[in-house]
Length: 141
Image 1 (spheres, rainbow, N blue to C red):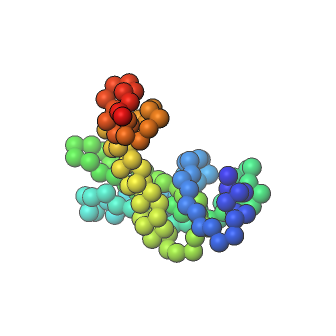
Image 2 (image 1 turned 90 degrees about the vertical axis):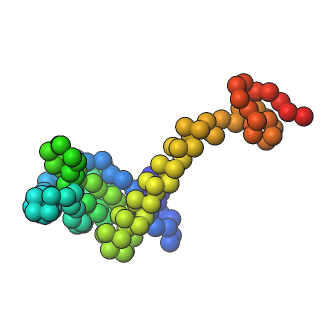
Image 3 (image 1 turned 90 degrees about the horizontal axis):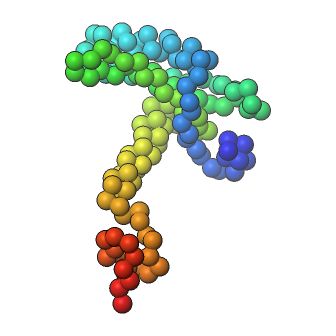
């Protein structure tokens, strides 16, 4: 998928990337700083960073944004929460993460709410039947 995205002229992208041992190691200095800030403030804190990184199967290095975050919840120990996204965008790490990547997550959460309302069910062949569907397909004339 990354090769396809890189081949598209003028296409900007931001994709989540799974954690791995190498990226966790690269993020550790940011995690230490986020833990220090969180310990002082008593709140969740995060630090942004970036690295040029190439997974074994990639033909080239790519720009990876690192969000080193410590999450705090009432009556729980602080939790490390490093996050990684791959992008070809040129804006600041924080702007890309908060205004592009997180907005995508907000849209996904809104879509999940629609699924809870079973709005995703369109098993009938006509538009109006789907609007009034309760159980099964009861066609409306």
